[in-house]
Amino acid sequence: MKKQTTKPAAPETFHQLAVRLIQRIPKGKVATYGQIATLAGDPRGARQVVRILNSSWKKEKLPWHRMINRNGQISLPPGGGYELQKSLLEKEKVVFGLNDTVDLERFLWKPKR
DNA sequence: GGCGTGACGTCAG
DNA sequence: ACTGACGCCACGC
Image (tube, rainbow, N blue to C red; front, side, top):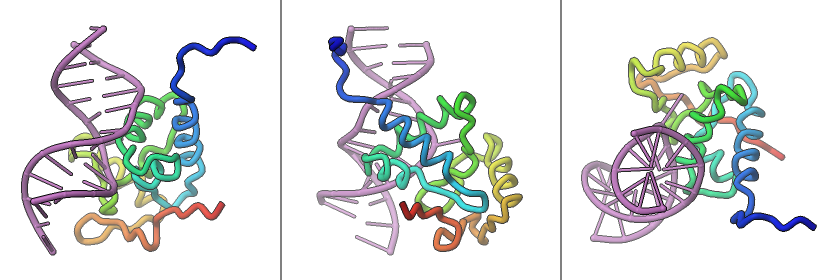
């Protein structure tokens, strides 16, 4: 067998797994960074999910606009894509509350398998 | 090659 | 209940 280079496991796993989950998000639903990170195996790896989005959003064509924070709010700052994301979500039948919050009980994507 | 940063989240005080 | 600090680790300089 070929000798593996000093690879500390498989970063691909976390990366691919997270990407896989994100791509599986149906329309009209949203997911949180922590949720994806938890499903990927790291409950505290939310930042890594963010890093993947910024890095693979163009390459993997991830629905970055379906990613929101644990509060059910958009994390992007106004002028940085916030309005764009909100607009995209509204087009997918996602409704925002008075505080620009999404009802996670209704729109949070819950993978059953 | 080391330090700082970052679309967040969790833990501790 | 709220605020502050830390953690995760890949990427940029």
